[in-house]
Length: 120
Image (cartoon, rainbow, N blue to C red; front, side):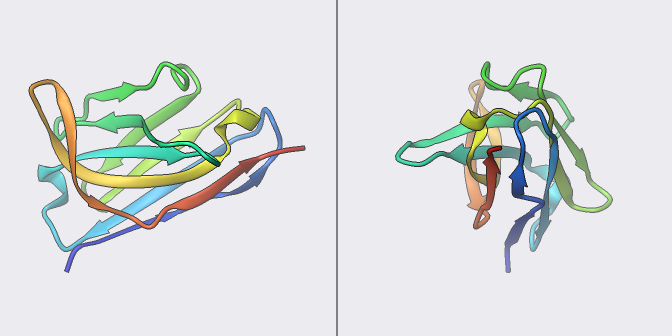
């Protein structure tokens, strides 16, 4: 049974930091690319960051230089370190497992999301 569980969300002040975790089970974690997405209030779900099976990261322009994605295959976990947070980063953050084809990620399994609120 595939499970993807995000954690680490919460309320943080502008300029602060959070680290999100995504624990996966039920599939061979090391064989999947992992991605983080977010959906803000009244908005669509956007890709924030991804990391390939080989560990190569990619980022949306809006988070480059502030967010870092990493993975620990021994723990079946992917992380999203978020620094210099802005109010516009407020969203539900989702983790997904999939792969890369023709230069683009595709997604097979999704978690339920964790809320991140950036506010003073």
